[in-house]
Length: 393
Image (tube, rainbow, N blue to C red; front, side, top):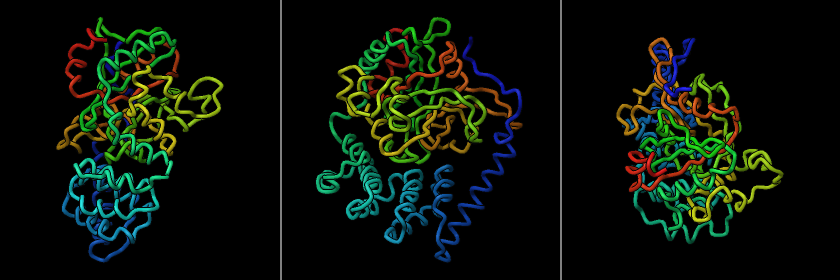
């Protein structure tokens, strides 16, 4: 079975040129411009659900959107907690460096909502601002999984994995009689990662004698932290339950990997045994002892406990040209899933599919379920990984 992708037999209307043009008009005129004008000129309340989604989708860094978000953050006490979280989505997606003062004010004054506190702290960290005092003095007795994940990512034990860690993990899984998908990502999620697969006999799937690597983007359109809803894909372990066709038109007809985070399903389903509860020590048994002390592999556990879910591995009908100014151009972000590139013609015919390549690899054997690891590889090891994978693995 080859891994070259395929052309869809029937056009998928949503991915046609006409449908894409209509979508952009709807997002820009019917949502963004309409809501912004009413808010800025007449002080009418914004529908933050649709506005945040549209501006994040387009990564709208226009002056108009800046003014909307500036006004919202300056008056954030007038917003509900839900609406402020939606404002954060647009802020992260469109202006990752422009609202440090406003986010500092929110971080210093938030006393109720852990997600708002963590998101504002993360924004300050990504802008190289000192947060140690805030971390030490706020929510100190809170055992929320969001706070746990936030504290973890600020500790020295939280780090990218090395190539030797990855080799050890592959060897650790070689006798498990289970299929594993490895999604190896950059810490900077603007950079696409790579997927490869280990079959239930412990062998890495190859074509023409070489390990098959397929590009995949683990970046959310929002670029929010991975333990926040609609944030980047969490690092750690996922259960692959099945392959299925999605009803989401933005994902399209190519089969997706239906996955579960810890706490998203019953423990017995996740672990494929009689476990009744999710305990961190059981989760960590999927990693070699050295990796168990690396806090980065725990983020999927805490994200699941915090309520994240429906993080699937899928294709895309989204027009890559929307993101031609982005580093990841050629790929399209999702709202927290892992997305593989697909190319469509003007009529909506699928011409090229990296997602199908991954599906084909997985379907070389009949078993549909297994596990997936999402791991951030140390940047110093990326050249070795990409150029010499067949030597080192």
